[in-house]
Length: 76
Image (cartoon, rainbow, N blue to C red; front, side, top):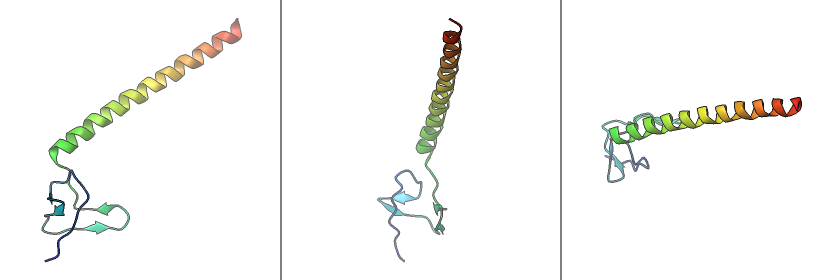
């Protein structure tokens, strides 16, 4: 049986750099459809998404404050 070398480091099927899944489905556009992140990686992704959302909200607030200052300069 052929062994598949995998470059995912956070997949539950990866064992010493090789895929241990019984069957592998590859999509030419999206890559490995068998890929399943382990719990640790999924938790990191969730934290990252929350941090990104907070940063995005802060940037949006900063832009609104900048716009309000621009309007006040015109009035002076």
